[in-house]
Length: 139
Image (tube, rainbow, N blue to C red; front, side, top):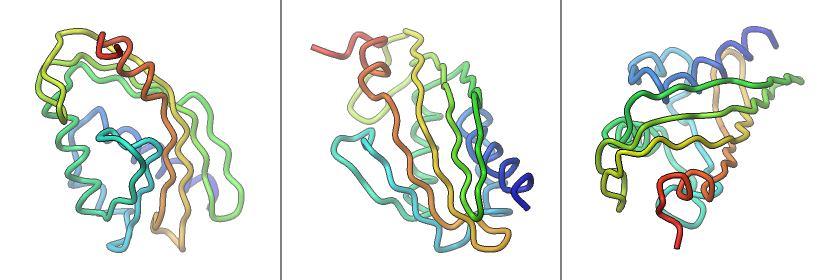
């Protein structure tokens, strides 16, 4: 089961690069909750499945040439923790940020909790400072 959960967590992360949200329904519970620290819009957040899909859609509107790399995964019980690196070119509007045309790269940690074969909750911590700094959006 841990191997399957690791593959599922990898698939979830790869959605950031392939713009195929329809696949998420195969393994995300309808009650899925995604905790963001920090949230792209500021502060922290807890997103429902629909809010999470909107975030991924808006990311795809703002970024192209996306590459998601899973650097490390550890599974224990009903949890999978993944360390990842995302690289993308800022080619469109994302949140309050107009396109810069620059490429950015940042890392993060994604911890997923499963109930049976469905992913029910994720905690995401990512390096927002590096994300913004490489886009020259830090003052």
